[in-house]
Length: 602
Image (cartoon, rainbow, N blue to C red; front, side):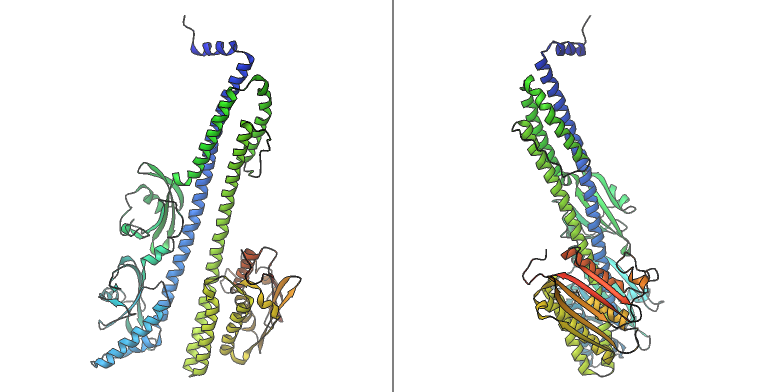
């Protein structure tokens, strides 16, 4: 009767010497352990990396969505500015004439007004105005303009005001002798005096500007971000040859049009991570695609190294004798426990094995692997910090358009009152203010520049409010030499005026003081306004304003943003404090480190 193979192996095992038996058992057990550990570690770390990739890509898509919302909101605002422009209203309201000189002057005045709007808005590619008599006015540098107004005049005929966005399409004009792909806003407008329809405004945004909003996001060597409409047609892509192509027949489109988040799909024999986010304004879907092998590339390298080191260790273990087998058991248990700690998420562990044999080499490489993993996690945390900076920049950017809008209204009011000298003065102050705000694109400026920006802002408001508002500045000259973040004081001063002095009876006053106390820079802004109720004062730096539900009071916005920016740049020990007595006034105190000009804020 034939003897079974398992019985033969069992007999052979029992026939070996103790030394060989321990060596063989140790070799087999260690080999299985290393292989199992490599597989588990690869699967766990790959899953973590994919989850992090989904989270990071989703954050990037959210940032793209917020950027697009700002662009299109600004486009609608600038469209309103254009159709309410005094020159445009006057020219469009004038009756037709056959006088060529008069028509030329009208065309020149319209083009100059449109050009002035476009020149300061980098995202506006063209502004075109169509009147009711087939006359076309443009912002300059445009040629071969095709009149597309008839369709929209007919579409908006039954409505007082008509506004419609047109998805990505070929431009109906040439610019620099070239056509382009644009997203266009069409808006019907009427006479501000009589309400009689005057014409149609077309504002076009170059698709390349939209693509630039996400072109610098790292999606790996072959990954990318693009935008499709609800029909699966590509509306924006950094790869221009893919514009207007369809992805409706792909497996992931049916999922992306209905769901948000991330999911793995197999395409062309490879696995890809697809992350989607809807953009309801245009029924768009923003999609990010990255190959799985790129996400797990570093993980595969670490796993291969780990397996290679394990193979060397197993090879060395074969030649170990029974005498050293026992000494190996103890460090192996240490390694096993340390690996378990890493699996449980503890990346601060370290193997302190002093032996220089294979186990010591394994410990050294293991420490490198844990260090690399910890470095990767720290890099991810740093990326989250940068995203928070972008979010704060988006929040901060909401302050300037509000101030600019109010100032432009004041200029219009002064112009109507024929106060030309005040118009010139406020325009000069406004220009000086924005020169300071731009600061060559730097977020870090000196306190001297910040004081100048704030003083310019106050001078503009003095022109607006006249004798109803005064201010004083008591700044220690040494304060001017220290660094700060740009637009630190202006949002707080704006809060003091609009939520403190504006509702006060009698003359309002703001006092700004700057001192150095115990190696700290202390700036205080004091007003004699109406003050802040205690229940609202307690909630200003919380996540939710007490009046947020009815959307009537945004007084804590500038204070909260400023406080978060200070803590982000300088640390949690610095920030903003508020003391207020309702009915008497408010004091806002800012605490900063004393960083001299030329120092590194990062």
